[in-house]
Image (cartoon, rainbow, N blue to C red; front, top):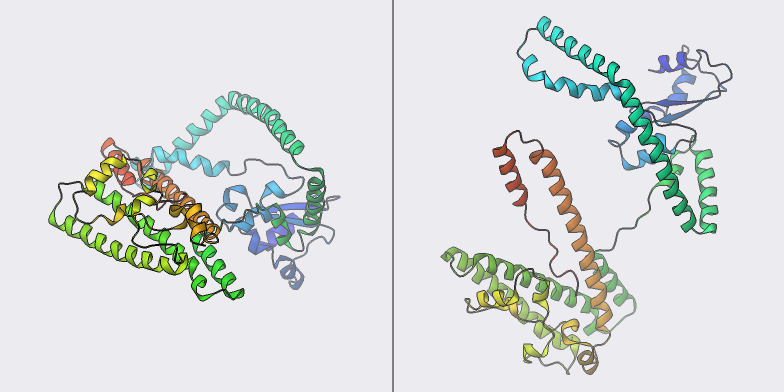
Length: 403
């Protein structure tokens, strides 16, 4: 590879001082290329020639994310985009005869493949005019649409930001040969939204840093526990609804155990509320005094859930726990617990971020299953089975994401 590159760089290169090389592993190959050429007695490269490494778009997406902005042709100044992988795309046409050619002898298989490739080349030759005309029209319309979109984006961007971006772009383009990492300026900088665990950890660190009272030091943990209990309540509601009134003893025992475990968590959470909410809160208050909106997030009718839950002796999934959002602002003020409201809002934001992340992961899994199973099915029976498996993948964990 080194010898071929050095010989090509010296052939008909008079007056050319800049060359771009595309190699599938250029991100690793180009790191020590100049050192290998200098240490070899048989390799020689023109000193005035500047080689810019690149990776073809067909392969760069299989590399790390950083390789895209550092070596893709989209970010190399003065480089056009052409279809250099057309030969690999033609292999798909051979899939039409691959089952028949699998059992052939070597001469017969070679003759069959030659016939198929010659037929493909002949079809391309006679249809080339229509194809090029159609692509030319698409490109011409695409250029106009891209220009309008760029103009709208350029007009919306602030002037000082555009000046800063152009300066950073010039620095990145001039320093890319010595340090490809500077091309990360083109990378999309989107900060991931903080999760509920991160927000809870931040609240705990802030409480420890300000030396708050011991009763308020674990308030973030208490609110986070309440949010987890609400998620468990909705999960239990959904399970009770799916089981219905006619269920087996095993299902009834499983639900009874979950109800018992959930009731214990609710009792512990309610008694600990006396520490965080003060003397103004009474743990024996009626649940009707609280703001009940747990059932509003469910798709089914809350009345049907209530009827189904009446079948069970103990229904902790319908108990409203004393979170600040359920108590209301006025009651929190009477309990001198108004400072708990922003803490719960922060944790609910983290809960919503976790729900959106789970939805993203769930949709990705659905897309992968659809691509690998549903679209690959060759018969209606296999497609039906694959679709059922895709629907059977479960629901994402996004219960009670917002208040």
